[in-house]
Amino acid sequence: MPVSPSRRAVRAAALSVTAMSLAGFQTADSPDRYVLIVNATSQTMIQFYAHDPCCSAWPEDILGGHVIPAGGSLRLNVADGSPQCVFDMRAKFSDGHYLEDAAVNVCEVTEHWFTEVRRRPPAS
Image 1 (cartoon, one colour):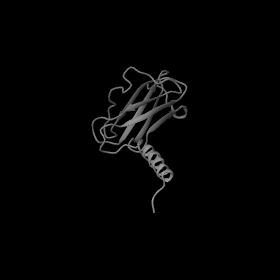
Image 2 (cartoon, one colour; image 1 turned 60 degrees about the horizontal axis):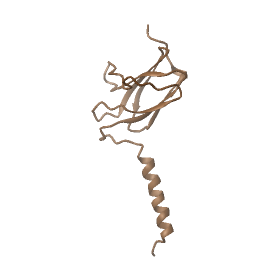
Image 3 (tube, helix red, strand yellow; image 1 turned 90 degrees about the vertical axis):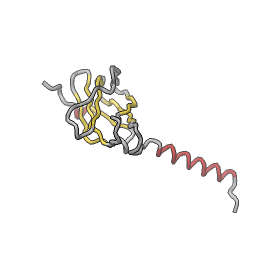
Image 4 (cartoon, helix red, strand yellow; image 1 turned 30 degrees about the horizontal axis):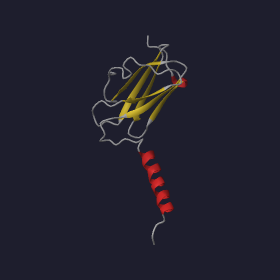
């Protein structure tokens, strides 16, 4: 039975929506790890770090002099050149407080939120 043009259009639209929803996920073989970092706090995020959980030292600040204002967001590539999907993340804020999140799988998420609730005081 032939498929009508309107039915073809509906199928094409359904395939497009499916492709768009899958586009947010990254495969483990992709060299890039883009994540929308959302600052849902009342302070400006002044530094952001991401690294392999097996490493103890935080690498250089990924923001590189940029900031994410309170309520703002920025899409960042957290990749370190490896096929790694899981990263520990750390954000430092303008008042000296910071947040750390362990074992974030950036191959499975497209955004990561930092919220006011878990902020820690500055290290002394």
